[in-house]
Amino acid sequence: MRILVSNDDGIHARGLRMLVGGLSNLGEVFVVAPDRERSATGHSITVHRPLRAKKTRIPGFDVQSWAVDGTPADCVKLAIEDLLADPPDLVVSGINQGPNLGTDVLYSGTVSAAIEGAINGFPSIAVSLASYCYQDFSPAGAFIREFIPFLLRADLPRNTLLNVNVPGTERPLGVKITRLGNRRYVNIFEKRVDPRGRIYYWVAGEPLEAQEDPSGTETDVEAVKNNYISITPLQLDLTDYAAIEQLRFLADFK
Ligand code: MN
Image 1 (cartoon, rainbow, N blue to C red):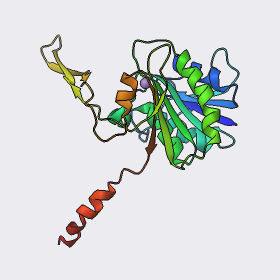
Image 2: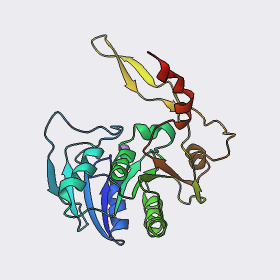
Image 3: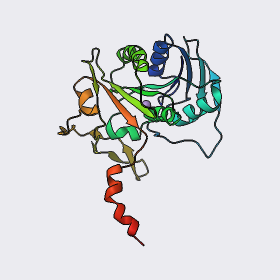
């Protein structure tokens, strides 16, 4: 099995090394990752300057690796189109330091690398350690190593990716299949004054406490808060099919 690994924390990130270590036992690992941290770059790609991919080494591992001076989406695109001699069987992005929950998946470079894999028709997984302060990636790494063979035996829908968030604790309580929650923030911008008296803003923000959801399916936000590993299947089609019916009358607009 050929496994393409990428991330958005950069090729030197500890979470990526944990993933490479775990996945090397499952198949041939190829790493194509940003040469520096590119968190929160979403699905952006580089179009206004050339991209360069530099052959590199991940210390301690004998895997083919490239550091790319672009975004996570650039990395996966380039890997599939040129760097890898043959297509991968699986794309895994992470392990990100920090959660990628709810609406935040739209800003996430980690998730976007997996989305790029899914766009190209490959089974793809994004993995995040849902904490900024918990530094131990080994529970998340161990889970992914056990989970992937189990996953590949199942028949996954094409163009669907899995967004996995592992809580920052030594022993998660189990696994929940979830839907995306609504991740809202308060005090998003800190407003400050620079030494020349001009105002500047720094994006920060505290997530609002998740609201209980009456619809039944637990959200990823709740699952992680309750110390469960959250697995959310994501699809690429953002179309609101119900709204198509509701908006049919607009076709009469002249
Ligand atoms: Mn990141």
